[in-house]
Image (cartoon, rainbow, N blue to C red):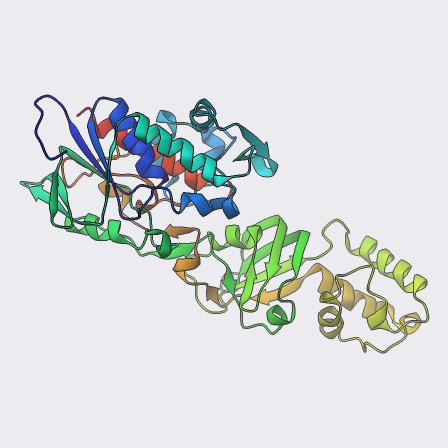
Length: 417
C-alpha cells in the first residue's frame, strides 16, 4: 500500500465494521488498491453481537418508508439508499451464501440466526477483492494543502489518494468504537455535533422498577409524554422489561431515540397493560375474575389477570386494601384498578451510559459532507461512512442498512475520483 503504482488509485478505510468492510469491498471492486485498517485483531467485532447475536441486517421496506424511521437527518441518506438499497443488501448477502428471512416488523435476519454468518460473508468478500488488512489504530490523518494524503497507524504512514473514516460511534467501546473517528474528523476541521446515546435503556427513580426487576411484558402499549409540553412524543405496542435501574426492551430502546433534550423527570412512560380491552371491557373482565374468586382477598384474586410480580404493585397503586374481600370491592375501587392497569406511569430519569447504547446520536455534521458522494466538503479526498456521521435510526435493521449504504457510496466515490 505504501508503494506508488502509477494509475492505480489508493484508498485507505479506517474501521473494519459494517460500513468499513462494505466500503472496502466497493472500492476494491472498482479497481482501487485498498487497505482496511482495523484496531481489533479481527473485523466485525460489533457486528457479531448485534441483534443479540442474530444480526438484523436490514428492513424489507422501500426508501420512502425507510426514511420515516430515521429521526436524524433523513434527507441526507437519500443518495446513499438510492445507491445501495435494502434490496441490494439482501442480494449481497444471499449471493455471498447467507440465506435471509423476514420477521415481524419486516426485520431481516439470516436464516441461521447467526450474526457470525453475516460477518463471515462480509469478511469473505473483503478478502476475495484483495483488500489488504492492517491491524492497528489510526492515530491521525495526513493532510497537505487541504487534501488528505493518507493516515498514520502506529509508526507507519499509509499513503492514500482517499481516506474513508468508518470507525463507528461511541457505543460498545469494548468493540473498538470509542470515538476515534470524531477525533480524526476534528483534525480535518469538521464539526462534531453533541454525542448522546440512542436506542438505549432508560433509567428511573421510581420504586416500581426495582420491585418489578426482570419482569418482561409482551403485547403492551407504551406512550411517552413530554411533561413540559404535555405532548405525546412516542407510541408503540410490543415488548419491554423492567430492570433495577429502570426499563429496557425493544419498545424502550426505540422510545429513547425520540427523547431529545433529556432531563430528569421531563419524560414519563405510560404503560397500558391491557391494550386489547377498552375501559368497559376491562371492568367486565375484572368482574368475571372477582366472581370466580368471590371469597378471596383482593390481592389473591388477580392471578389470572396479571403476572405475579405486578400484583402487589397494582394493588398498592389502586389504593385498595389487599386484604379486602373481592365481593366488597366497590365500582369506584374497580375503576381505580382499571386506571392503574390502563395507565401505569413511570417517570423517566435519563439514559443509561452511551457505552450501553446500540447507536450514538450525533456525529460529524452532515452539512459538512456531500450527501451524493460522502466526501468531506472541507478536506479533499476524505470520506465518511456509518455511525460516525450524524444520522441514526430506530431499531429494526435501519442502522445497519445506513452503514452498508453509506459505506458503498463512500467506497464508490473514493475509488474513482
